[in-house]
Length: 595
Image 1: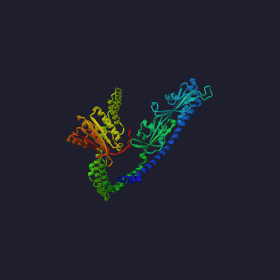
Image 2: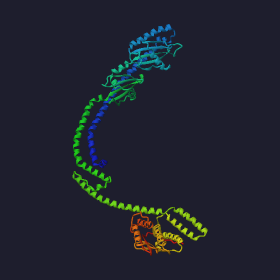
Image 3: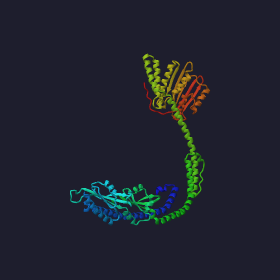
């Protein structure tokens, strides 16, 4: 019940309607089927009783034929005929045997022929059909002593009617030297009408088909069976069904198929009862069920239609509107849903439209915020990419520089050794795994960088550093001072004829902030160029090729700490440049000095 209550109103209403509409026809169908099964089962039982009697008669006929063959075959006169080799004596005995055969045929009119063949090939036959006996003799084992069924014969021109053939080996039974030896053969030809007439005598339902099969051949089919006209493949299939009725569709009609074995003639009796004839009286009940179903549909449809119009239709309209909204069409947020129906439906409509307005406002805010976050993430990725691009094969270069250092020591060139060692320290520092380092570590690498340039321009570049000791352990992004110092050397001091000085200061400010100041007394910048550089720092455009290093530092600082931090630049044409880097104070560990 709880699961049902969670379903939609439409589903619940339709489910209840379907249940109500299904009850009456379902009851009628169940009653109709049960009645049909009872009738079919009764007919099945009736057929089983009829065929049981028929099987008994076939068994009796088989036993009678077997008795005739045994009594005749082991009669003294017949035994003498089979064992006699003298032609005259054989002729005299054949007349007596023929007389015996005639007596048997007169008392059993279904027997159309009796054939006896002795060991020397001489035979006696009432009608001269020795070929039938010869056909069976060739198939029969010489040592077989029982009566064997020879099959159903339809293609013999010497026979007026279809016939069944039975045969048996004959062995010497008189007290002679040939006792137990095969001395002949006896065959009996039985008219098929003897069994067919037995089938015709049985009462059965109108339209029922009976088939008699033996050795895979159709021996008999009643009038209804001829109309049904089953082919050999279907007869073979149905013969394996057994005595329990199996329903099959034949020619668009349903039949109850049963098969009863007749082992005496290696065959079976197949019955096909039309189900329509069995349940003819039940069709009235079926018609009544249909009428009740139609009346129920009419009575239920009217109130359900009213219910659908007042509840389900506005709800369906609301669901359709929500699906449009779910599809991601933001224009739907600017529209309204109009629902008509009961008072509750109108309340839902009003509240839903109010919710849409609120969602529209929140969606716009979300889009604005998402756009800003996306832009910040892009800037961060660009800054990281720029930083990574600066690390081109540092391991290879570092190893090469170590080799140069070794050569410089061997050659006794101390200046080359110092420059190479400084450059090697810078490379190893740039490939250090962490993104943050202490101020002390960053200043040491700046010292190495200054050493390189002092080697390039002896006596032209001076370097001074003033840093409070308590700031040495502050964490800063790696490689943010070096690009500023590089600009000061390349753009400030190198163009100056007499060189100059670079001064680095780290100052503690209020609100736990630190300011790193890089000052040079080089050529400076004109005001127009200074404004252009300041605009570049404020811009988000990454397409510019100038001032990449200093803009990279500014972007990294802002992405790392926020918009309140970054770079400030002041420059005086002919008097130098001052760059201030504003950072928060983040301590890593107490500073340790090493000799």
